[in-house]
Length: 289
Image (cartoon, rainbow, N blue to C red; front, side, top):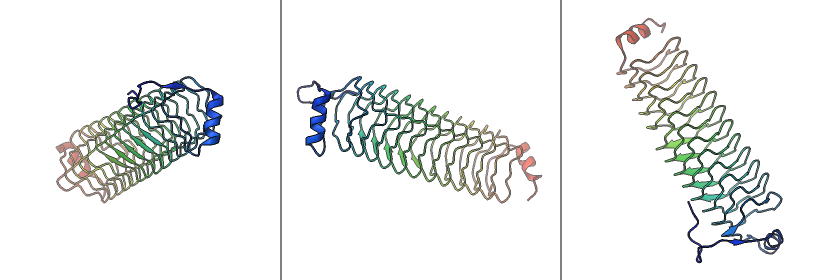
């Protein structure tokens, strides 16, 4: 990703004194298309600043205050934004690869068509954020709060989401293959028709989650709380469901062939027309009602 909208195709350098003057004299500081590479900017108050198209690669914005800033088309590769306040920011078409966002507050932000691959997003706060058309492949979002957000057409393959909160999060056309959700709370999450194959959800909470027609082939659901979840039509072949709690869950039309339900609790679960191996069917029929 490059910044191509600057009329003369170049970026202008700017000194710290000039930045201070811009901040002091403008309600929405205009720092668009500036060369700010490897700069220490964490001490500036950049709330409502316009940083469109600027180069912030390897810059230090740790604990920076960028509330409601516009960071569209910025280069943030390897920048440090740990514990920064990015509440309400606009981050569109930006390149954030390998940036550090540990502990950053992103509430009510707009993240659209961004490259967030291999970023450090541990304990990030993304509540109430719209996240669309963005790539998070290989990123660490462990301990993050992604409650009440929309993840639309995002790539979350090989992402670490262990110990995260994703209550009422909606995933639309998002790929979660090979990702880690161990001990995460996905209560009431919307995950219909998404790819979760080979993901791990050990000891996760999926109560009332919607997983209709989703791909869970080879997924680990060991010890997962799936009470009242909707798994109608889900592809669950070779899925590890040992000690999973499926009480009152909907497993109608689900493909459960070669899955391991040892110790699983299926009391009250609806399994009409579910596809099962004969051995599995006999085993489940012997469980107490």
